[in-house]
Image 1 (cartoon, rainbow, N blue to C red):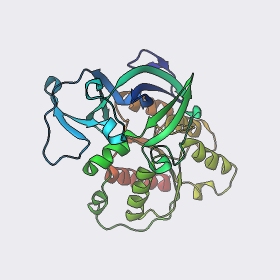
Image 2: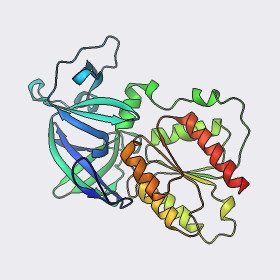
Image 3: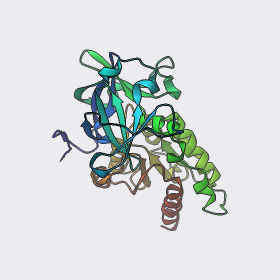
Image 4: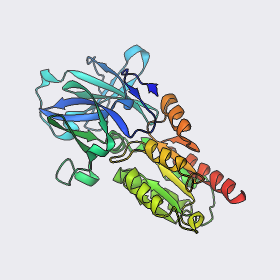
Length: 306
């Protein structure tokens, strides 16, 4: 077990997360605590010319320049100007970003099994910015897809197909690859990039549970080696997260030899240690899609030579 920044002991692979709850215009939202570095009282923000309408500008705490995103404006919610009281400072995809919110409520520890995909009428649903809905005590928490928000506002910080072009000429491969990724936008981008890199035999699932159900169905298949060559998983997903999926695969006598690559915006020192303890073969931070392809090439080459 390991202690995170909030002091709560979380055992590796237990399929739980801590959600920081915050409010905007009376609605309750959530962000994975693993993405949060600190909460700050807002400082003066320097506007940036030609920036996205939802980008307020930048500020410079302790010499570190951080972009500020007006989250109420992005979500289309109205709150009084004098009631916009906090910055949530985040770090993911190796970037620091501040999100302006109204209030921070506290931290809830929730099982991923309690988080469901929203329907299409809530913040764009399956293709929107609500990655999940969690019922906790007497309230419903909307878990936002902060990766998608930043990718829409600043596309240059997201996955780039140009990285595949830089790898040079590629051969077509029919190696069967399983992907577990809940973000519709990112899943589409990853699959398109892998197709461009020559990997055409891909099974994509919306969460770890669906991927695990598929893998479990193949446990007794004598042709397992030709049904699944490698698994790529995100960490944050409803129903079952990537750490739990990795643990289940690596604890299974029939499946443990399948290489598992964790591809997530949350790769830092703490999560890397956790992933390694669970048996992940490689761990990469989004949006390094070119590096991901190189890692896939390497792991499949090793597996085929074994």
